[in-house]
Image (cartoon, rainbow, N blue to C red; front, side, top):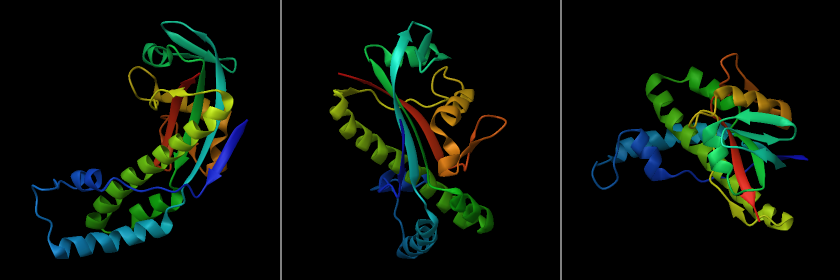
Length: 199
């Protein structure tokens, strides 16, 4: 069963956010004026974030060195197979911060877009981490107490076209996400991932 979650709470990693803008905490001085300008831009971003996610639990039906089979689907990837070794199930998950954020990115001046892009990247990562933790808490009720880290299309040799599988099994359009002809996710601040789980 696929579950839909809306208004996922998140808290961005401020150190990572500033690093994306080229600042290093303790090494680069950030002026008061810069802090105020960034905060004004971030407030615009926060107002349009619509965090949402989907996830589903699937037993691993077969696992070899080169492929993983679940729900009648076979994914050929040595990297994913190794990542799933020793686990009995996997979660598919997808999150986004919404299409309005992409729209905002497209209509602000370049300087603001750079700040917003960094914020969006950290925000969607924080949303993914928040849902990941919720999945792990829920997994205990199914006897799942061990979890590997998230593994997304594009990692290792797991092809981006695997996003089509997320589209099919999770119904990504329920959270306003679609897969492009080149298999990237739209809106751009969206993430799909596989989480191996076991008892």
